Length: 307
Ligand code: AHR
Image (cartoon, rainbow, N blue to C red; front, side):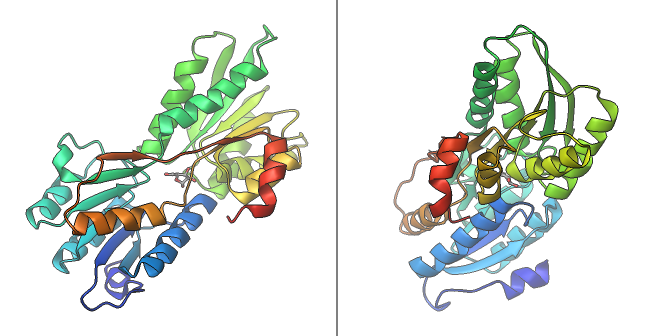
C-alpha cells in the first residue's frame, strides 16, 4: 500500500496547487465504488491534486497511508476510517505536523475534537432508525412475533455500531420484535450470502432481514433463493445505501425498503479542502441529506440513478 500511496492517482496539476491525501476504506461495496468515483472526479473538477490509497479494509494500511501523506507534506489529509477506534496516535502526528484532517463518511471515537477539522458524512443512527420505523409500520396491525435476522457491517466500524443502535433502540420498544440472529457480513455481497446461508440453516423461521448495507442484502437474496424461498415475500428485506442493484431488487419485489446513504461526498469534500487551506472556518460536523425508497419510489429513481 505504501507503493500505492507513492504512486497515488494524481489528477491535478501537481505543481503549486492544493494536494489532498485521501485514504479510502477499500472497495467492499457498490456504495464505496461510487464514493471513490465521486472523490476522484470532483478532485479533477476542482483542480485539486489527489493522492489516493485503497486500504483494503485494513486499519494498518490506512495508518501507513496517513503517515506517508504526513511525510509528503500534503496540504490536507482526508480519510474514511475503517473502524472507530485506534486513531489518536496518528491523528496527533498529523496535528503536530500542522496538516489538517477531514473525516469523510465514518467517524472516529477520539475524545480530542482538535484532531480533525471537520467530519462530513451521514447520520448512521438515523439510518438505523428509519429502517426500524419501516419495520414498525409494516407490522403495526399484527401481534405475532417477528423473527428478525441482522447482517451487520464491518465489526467496530461507525456504520455497523450506529445502524445497529438506531435500529435496536426503536424496535426494542415492542417485545414482538425479536432479533434471532445477528452477525457481521463485512459489508460485502459474498459474506452477506455466506452468513445468510448459515442463518437459514440454523433458524427455522426468519420473517425479516435487516442488512446494514445493500450489498449484503443482495448476497442474502441469492442465499434465500437458493434455499427455495422468495426474498421480499417469505422473508422481507430492508437495507441501507440505495445503490442501483438494490433499487432494482425493490422494483423486482425481492426487497421491500431501502434507506439511502449518500456516497457522493466528493464535491462537498473538495469545497471543504479549499476552505480549510484558505484558513476559512468550517463546521465541525456536516451531515449529508438522505431519503428512503419504497418500490414505487425506486422505480421512479432508477432511470437517473448514477450508481
Ligand atoms: O460507511 C458507509 C458504508 O460503507 C456503506 O453503507 C457501505 O455500503 C460501505 O461499505
